[in-house]
Length: 263
Length: 141
Image (tube, rainbow over all chains, first blue to last red; front, top):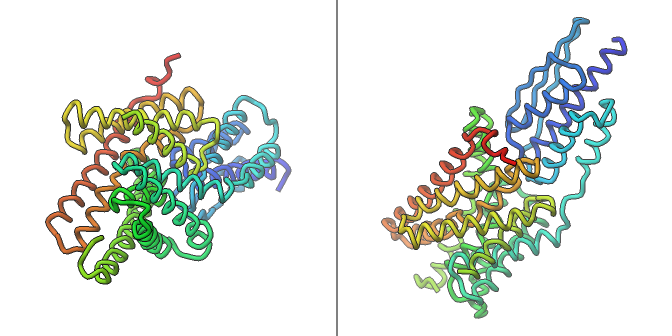
């Protein structure tokens, strides 16, 4: 392989890395394809084809000196952190403006983005609590209900951050999440913090809603990326069903304990 | 009403933090969330529409604002829409559906479950409709 080929391989690697970060953090398929194509085009690789699924990227490219390049990357379906999507988007814009002369510089920048610290745990937990509390207002809860939803949101996300994300599969994680929501809400009511279970749970359930997967699934399907879109929608629906089942199971158990009385 | 709008804004910002939206966009997210809730409430109470129809219009407004913000700030629209859409997610309906299902009130369970699905479809339609609008439309400066 001569130097030129080496250089082109590196361009594909950079494109792959950019695509990987985008896909993993909740960008839609068309954006991933477009960004990779832009990067390749800017550094002079015209013959690049990509095929992007929700959990994999396939790139092939051929050039004059007969060797062709192909790469397959497996990308696990993960949690979304949109700041990385924004950063890569910004980066590809800057590349087109000519701020990065060589692919190496882009690669370095991508490494920085990939290792960008995700928000602190306590911040997320607090945000979950606040979100639950304020969404409880929208569901029609009074002040006490909101306080209960706040507590439930904090308990829920503490569980998500320290147990569910680390040790459990998505199905089980969301199932127990549903159970934990009900248990913490019922406990709050038992301790006279809240009054209306329906409002509290409507608020407390919100941090578990798989919003990014749902919205991306719809957008991918609307763009004609049916496979990726269907997988993402399935991911969203499955997670939501699991939460609902978790809530239902906890209800059923409580229902039996309380002898048919629902609070 | 004002309390609800403030709650929608703060709740939306809290959820944008969960999804890792960069801090400088929080103010947009909050505004979009509150605007969505305002439209939903107006459609529901003033115009007298059904819940799914109100959610549809709210989603359209949320998406329009998100796309304007996206063009203005030169960043993906999803950053703004994700959290903005949360206030219209049918959390209460899903609660009632599971509650009735477990307590063997199947007719009511079906009723609220179906309402939740209708709301979901409204959200889907709202997202798709706005995404079909060409990029040029949002580029008024």
